[in-house]
Image 1 (cartoon, rainbow, N blue to C red):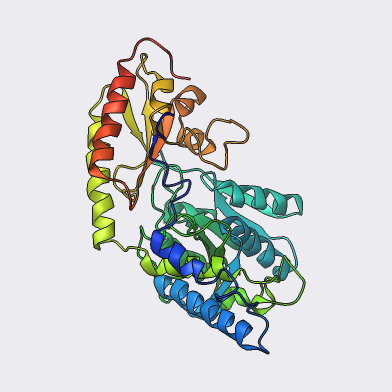
Image 2: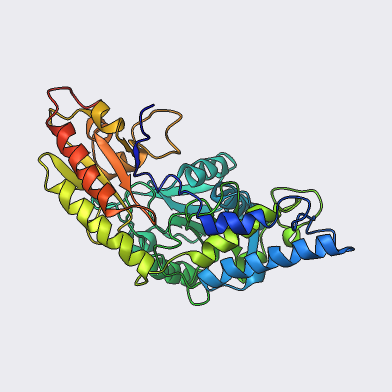
Length: 384
C-alpha cells in the first residue's frame, strides 16, 4: 500500500492535537462528563456546564475578550452567517455594506444574499500584493454604511489585513466591523479588549481542534442589534439555540489554550521551517510568490508555477496541498482570490497553496523541496 502524501495543507484543516483529544475523551462515555449543559437540575448537567464555561473562558482569554461575549457555533461559516445576517436583521432596513473580493465564500455568499435583500455592497479590490488598505476602506465609507466585513488572514495567500487600523476608521464612522479570524488564531496576537472590532468569527479545526465547532465574538455595540438565526430554546443568550456539544466545545477550549502566539516556541518552530521551505521553493526556476512577501503570516503561502515542464501529477502523488481553497473545490473554479490579484485564469490554475504547522518537521521540508525539484524536471507534461 503506497504511503500517504506528506501533509502541507494546514490552512484547509489541522490534525487534532493529542492533548485536545484527551480533553474531549473526558466528555465521552457513560463514566465521563456527558451530561446536557442545559440540565442544571442535577450533577451531570452541572458538570457539563462547568467544562463548557471553562472552555468559553479559554477561548475568550486567547483573544482578550469577556467570556460572555463568546457565542458557540458550528464553525466559522455559521459564525460569519450569524454575524452578517444577525446584524442586518437587527438594523431592520437595508443599508450599505463593505467587504472585499478576497473573502472566504462564507462571507461572499452571505453578502450576496443580503444584496438580494436590498443591501448595497461594495467589494473592495486588493492591491497587487493582495492587501486591503485602511485608506481603501475609508474611501468606500458612505453615509449609509452600516457594516464592514474583512478577514484577518487570507486563507489562500497568508496575507494579513491591518484590521486594527481599519476598525478605528469604521468605528469613527459609526458602522460595525466584523472580522473573519478563522485563520488568525495562533498566527496573530489578538486583543479584542483594545481593538475596534465588534464581531469576530473563529473555528477550532484551523488551530488543532475538532471540526464542527466554532465561536462568534459579539461585542457590546453589536450585541444590541444581533438577531438569532437558529431558534429553539434560547441557548447562548438567545443568539444560538441547540444542545451544546460538550466534547466539541471542550476541544475548542483546549485548542485555543494551546494556541501559540508570535514569539513563542510553537510559532518560532513554524516560522523557521516556513522560511526554509519558502526560500528553497522560490530558488527553483519558474516559481514566484503570490501576495505580499512582507505583510503575511509565515504558515501559508501561494506559489505560481510558470515552468513549462512542471509535472503536477508527480507533485500531487507525494504532497498533500491545495490548488484552490477548500471553499472553491466543489466547483473546480479558478481561485477568485488569485483572479482578484490580477492573475489570469491560466496563472491562477498554475498556482498552489502550501501551508505548514505544528507537526511539520525539518525532514518533511527537505522532502517537499526535493519533490518540487523533481516535478519541475520530470518532463514536458503541462501543468494541469
